[in-house]
Amino acid sequence: MSGGEGEQAAADRAAADAVHAELLARGSEGSPQPRLDAARRAVELLGDPQRSFAIVHLTGTNGKTSTARMIESILRAYGLRTGLLTSPHLLRINERIVIDGEPITDRALADNWADVAPYLLMVDAELAASGEPALSNFEALTALAYASFADAPVDVAVIEVGMGGEWDSTNVADGDVAVFTPIALDHTRFLGETVAEIARTKAGIVKPAATVVTALQAAEAMDELMSAAEHNEADLVAEGVGFALLDARLAVGGQLIDVRGRAGEYRELFLPLFGEHQAHNAAVAIAAVESFLGDGTQPLADDVLTEGLATVTSPGRLQLIGIEPSVLVDAAHNPHGAQALGRALMDSFAFDSITAIVGVLADKDDRGIIEALDPIVDRFIVTRSDSARAVAADDLAETVTAVAGPDRVRIEPELAVALAEARDEAGPNDAILVTGSITLVGQAMLIAREQNWRSRQRRDARPPPEARARRPRVAAHRDPRHGGARRRLRHPRHQRPRRAARGSRLRRRRGARAAAARRHPRGAVPLGRVVRPRAAGAAARHRVHRGARRRHGRDLRGILDLLLRQGHPARRREARRRRLTSARASALFCKEPP
Image (cartoon, rainbow, N blue to C red; front, top):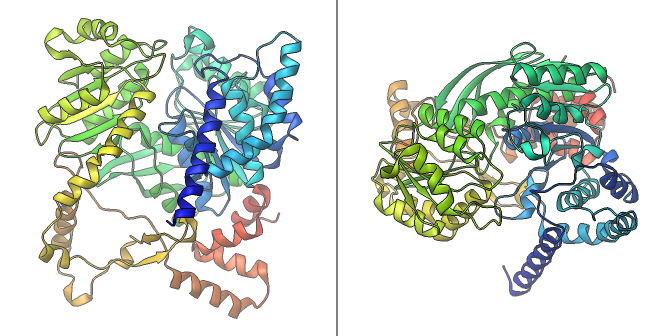
């Protein structure tokens, strides 16, 4: 990067930080305003940007962000230009507003804020005149996100609610599909004291004639969702009836899942996330995409679905941020999430011992979180994040001691010190788990990045040159979606050795496991079948375009049909170039007349 480019990047970063500071000046997101009129007035002044694209709307207690990321990834694999709004962020606010798979740039964030800020101030003045509080942090962020998606522009936006649903500011938009992840007790101060009350609030995102896709729910929650669907004449599709997770098996770097969707069955899908709960999230995501693209009547293309799931990431959700020893982070911040975390650790890993570094925010059920983790954790280190809402380490330690006993609890208010001590004391097959709040996880990820825990260890543990020389060559190309960065293609056909050197299937399988053992920490990666994401090289795409021109001349619809049948990523580029609307793309991809 040249000096001028570096100065411009620094200026853009400062401008984005200023946007974040202005949002924070509007108050904490932990105290939302239970209203919708103010957010509706803000987007009305902006010209209702949320009406310029289709919307998949998500709510629930746990799994919202992971499910939203899966839905967005599959839709993007289909060639749609996507927007994604999630909350909260881990490191930077840019993470919340994602356009076509990439966080919004600092410059775009600052420019869009400059466009919407005057209108937000107008709404603030109107609210002050009527004696109401100004737009909250999340209300302003929602308006900014919708304006950013319209400016991009996107074909479809996947929107995660901030809290609840009925009065959440994201609900000014009308979702074509309303998605519900498991509903449990959380934010009881705002949403209600029972699961039924919370489900009733969350069911407010169901809009007339929409499609409702829901994960397995408690009976009282399902009753509320069914009532909302009936009231709005919406179709309801529930896990276990309309679709289901058939099987989930461990694999290197994730798991293989079989799913029965609304319109077809999908086998041997690689999901690079751990835990049975993530497999269920994937089943919900597939049903939601089926509902959006073909109203649940057209099966998804196998190769596109494989690519969409295989490229999913979910930062801060059972993520490995350090090795030797293994350091995992998970944003479980309520008992339901902590129980899912415990099951995933037991099913997917085989550590000798686990040390949990925990910090909890004041409005959370800290005792319920610790009770869920107690059976799988050998020792606790109690700390706190830098959030103003974080429980003091001494106060949280009293709760942890009451559950786990004094011999298994240590207090260290500074997270950096707690991490350093835990890493020094851990053995080669031990693990350190950071959990309890999203802010704590974000801080741990920043420390790991600054200290370069993973890359330094990988560099030290590289195999000798003679071992590296035996590895098959991997094709690479310049990928325009990633700014022209060189990207490794990992489809098996790019790694196929010559016939004379293939050897037996057993020998190849052992070689793959040995390579996986070198790349990952001992005990942190289960062994199983290696499944690589699908990809196609530049030469393959060129062949598709050349064949399309030869067969169809200048018939653009014929070219698109050929690309769709062959299933290459060139389809996505063509659809993006033409900026197809979601309705048009849905009809095209499902091979129905528009």
